[in-house]
Each structure stands twice: as structure tokens, then as C-alpha cells.
Image 1 (spheres, rainbow, N blue to C red):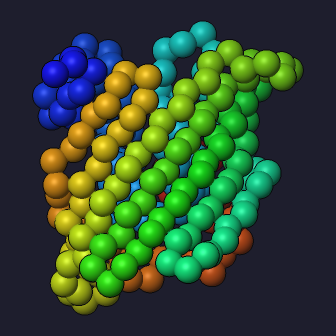
Image 2 (image 1 turned 180 degrees about the horizontal axis):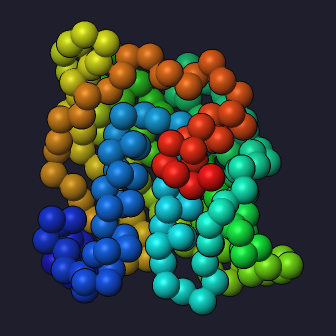
Image 3 (image 1 turned 180 degrees about the vertical axis):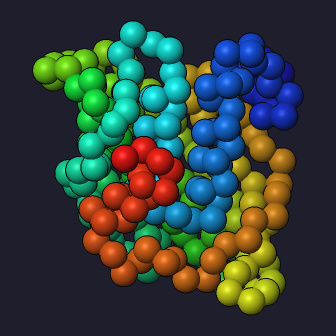
Length: 199
């Protein structure tokens, strides 16, 4: 088997990478698993950009995120959402997050694929200094409802420049009602960034 195919639990990382990428990645997986909106993905991307040590990186304070595109459609039992969100750091560096999410739901299962293209731009530049693409595939087996949450069984696969990573199945408590659903995309993004201490 190729060494590109590896389990998240077995992946070896250096101390610096563990500090800067592991917590946001775990949170990203958790948020995706419970079906949170695309604004969450932009917020997690901003956390990663703030933590990284590259020459071009976001710095606090981060301006309220701008939702440049937000489209969705439903065809039969397939839902699709596409969004572009721009974030500018206090140092003028911009992060552009382009996301495409597709979800197919049946009585027993939810299959969700999310592809995220994230670009960092130096101040006053239209050419990105760094671009990454990540796809996460989630298979959700619906579980019992307890109170206002459903206890689902979730399996995730991540595909990015490092290869293919798999996460063992886990139980996730998914809220039946999204508390941010009634808000505009801009307000959803602002609240999500504020909750994470990015504004």
C-alpha cells in the first residue's frame, strides 16, 4: 500500500506542525460532521492562516468576513451549496475561501462532500502567494434522537496535497435545528468568527 494512504491516528507530525495544524483540523472534521455551514469552514481556515509560520499569513485583528458569493440549490434529494468568503487580516493579507458542498440524504444516511480552495494574497496583490485544496468526504449514518440532538455515526476521508487520510468512525451529536439558519450569510460569518475570537 502506498504511504500516501494513511490513518489520521497514525500520521506522524513534528512538534511545530502539531501545534499549528492538529487542533484546527480536528475542529474542521467535527464541524463538517455535524453539518455546520460553509461559514464555519472559512473561520477554521482563518484560524489555520493565523497559526501558520509562512511569510504570508493573516494577523489579528481580522476584519469582518465578506461573503462574495452564496448560492444553493436542491434537486431531488441532492443539496448543493457554493460560497466565496474573503477575510482580511490587520496586516493587509487577504484569505479567499471558495467552497463547494454537495449532500445526498436518504432516510438512513447522509453522504456529504466538501471541497475547499483557500488562497492567501499579500497586501495589495491580486496574485496568491499560497493556494491549498482540500476535499472531505463524510458518510453519516443517522442515529437515535436524544433531546434536541441526533446521535449519528460518522466516517470521514480527507484528500489534500499530503495524500489520503481516513478517520475511524465516530459518534457525533448533531443538532436537529441549526441556530444560525435564520440569519443572513454575512451575519452567520460574523458570529462564527466572533465566537472563535477572530474579530
